[in-house]
Each structure stands twice: as C-alpha cells, then as structure tokens.
Image (cartoon, rainbow, N blue to C red; front, top):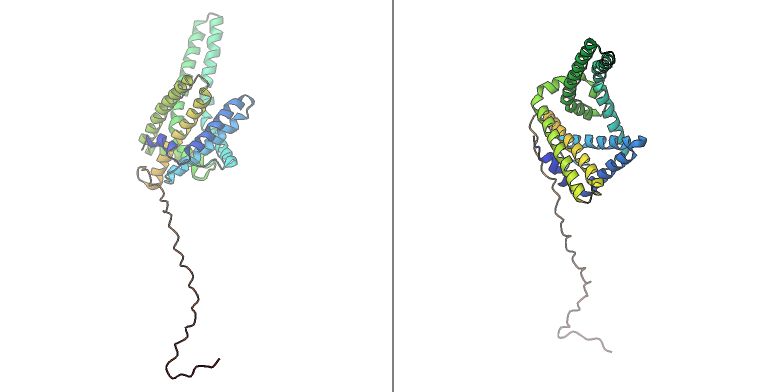
Amino acid sequence: MDYAKALTFLWEDPRWKEKLAIGTGVMLLSVILMPVLVGIAGIFIVMGYSVRVLQNVRDGNHYPLPEWDQWSDDLARGFKLTVVGLVWALPALLLSLPIIFGGVVMGFGADRSADFLTAIGGLAFGLGYCLVLLFALFYALVTPGFTLWFARNEQISDGLKLTEIWQWTRRNLGGVLMVMLAYLVASLVITTVASVVGTMLCIVGLVVTIPLGTLATYLYQYHLIGQLAYKDRTGAPYYVPAAPVTPAPTAPAPVSPPLAPETPVTPPAEDGDVQPQG
C-alpha cells in the first residue's frame, strides 16, 4: 500500500485548489449549521464524495479526486453509508447495558453504604466497559470491509452482508490493521498541523484549517480503503497508474493559394501568312 500517495494525491490533481476549497466550505457550513441539525447533510455529502474517491482509486484512476458535481447523489451515498454503519454499531447498545446497570447499582450501594452492592455494580461496570472496548475494536476492523462492500453497488444491503464482510476482513487482516494504524497516525498528525497553523494565523485561520484538516482525514481514510479495493479487484498491490496522455496540438496544414486562371496564348504569325488589313 502507498500510504504517502493517500495524502499527496490531494494536490497532484490539476484542479486540487478548487476541489479542496469547495470541500472545506462544505465542512465549515456543516459545523456552523450542526446546532440546527442541517449540518448533518454536509457530513453526508462529504462521506458520499469520499466514497467516489474510493471508487476512483479502486478503478485505477490517476486523478481520483472527483469534481463536486453530484451533490444529491453524494448526499444519498453518505446517508446510506451512515445507515450501514449504524446497523453494524447496534450491538454496542446492548453491550452498554452492563455499564448503565453497574453505574446505577454503585450509586444505590454508595447511598446506603452497602459495600456488596457497590462491588457488584463495579464488576458489572467493568465488564460492560471491556465488552464495549472489544466491540469498538471489532467495529474498527470491519469498517473498511462494509465500506468497500457498500461502494460496489451503493446499496445498503451490500454493506450488511455480515458473513462475507467478516470473511474478507479475516483474509485481509494485515492490510486492514495497517489501514487502521495509518489512519490513526494521519488523523493525529493532520489535526495537530491544522491546529498549529490555524493558531499561527492569528487563530482566525482555524476557521479554514480545522475543516480542511477534517476533510483531508476523510479523504486519506477512503483512499486507503480504495487501495484495498484495488487489490481485491485486481489481485495485485496498488500502484499509481500513469497520468492520462494529452495529445500534442497539431499545426493546421498550410493552405495553398488559389491558382491564377490561365490566359490563352496566341501563337506568333509565321512568314507568308496573310495579315488581315485594317
């Protein structure tokens, strides 16, 4: 996998400035409008756009950063992928019940100085915490799989093929783990750099650098998943495809000037010929 290319591809596109500027604006509006829940639509759009990045990497496009020309489709993609992620996360609700139960029992035992109840509540709380932590690790492992499966046909049902996705995750466990680690490291580095640069720009710069850093983190993650999809499609490790060749402009053929009309030539009179009298 090419971990550096998952970041450098952002500014290798001929129109990277315009594309990143639009994406940063979408992230900024999402944060501003989040209190009225309208901002969640912007997050869906960015997720749908990121799915297209994944698909372009999977298909071997040299410039995988797409144009912002499918707003409604990106919104639908992001919403569907969010539904897939929520369904996969449902077991976390059940696993969190021991935490809630343990907290209530510990509070009840503390009010009545009942050490036994406090101990039972502590055990339940600790067990629930461990279960949730294990499930969080499991969820992180299957995220590339259900994202890749969803990107195939953009159907919610594809992202919920539990058995196939888990089997694929087990077969590609090494690559999935590396994607997880690379994403965590990149997220930390990008966030730190965005915060430092924004602060150096009189804090006002945070308005731009934080949304830009969040967008770059999204795109980095989906580019890495796209590399897994490329290997899954071709059976070969990801490589950077050649840039499309632009034919050199050809000079127009010279135009020949039109030929002048021929004038008839009168042959000279020979000796002995009778000349007409005037």
